[in-house]
Length: 112
Image 1: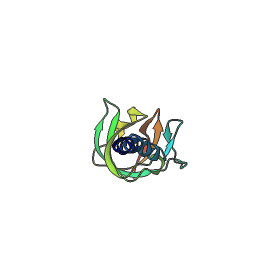
Image 2 (image 1 turned 60 degrees about the horizontal axis):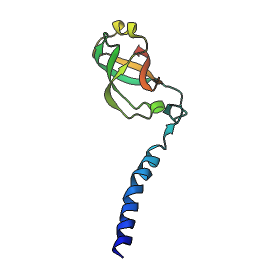
Image 3 (image 1 turned 180 degrees about the vertical axis):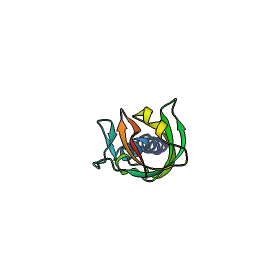
Image 4 (image 1 turned 45 degrees about the vertical axis):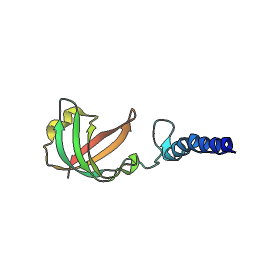
């Protein structure tokens, strides 16, 4: 009887990670991006830091629906690095994000 209980216990814990993994895959497109069918839309943001050398900008942004991201402050690579010279920290901007080579990336940024 004890071996049956042990086997049941082992099976429950052995399959639990698979169940969690399957659940966490619900929003994924197996072609390399979020499964959201939404087209990229401009998102309100504030520039917190510009790293022109690395081609990145740290933004405090609202929800990014097409990437399935909630509001947060995060550094993003910028597709057009040269455009960073046109902006200053503290500016309010409208930013369009997209998944570029599997990485959330700023594809367009404009002053508000």
